[in-house]
Length: 63
Image 1: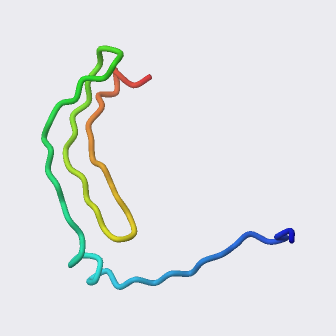
Image 2: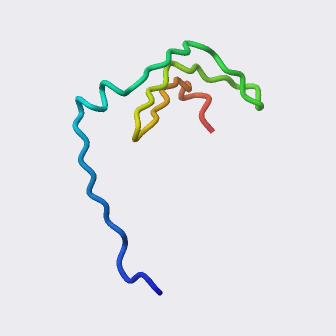
């Protein structure tokens, strides 16, 4: 059975609920990449609906 229209989801989650269930893990660690470059991992924020990784990759090292 073909689907003629894209699926659309409308999800509403109170931000207060996400804040109470989120977890922040601080790394503050440099990671060596296989090509000899390195990036600095700052932190990761995990919630039931998302995961965000904060990092620093100097502009002059980007491919």
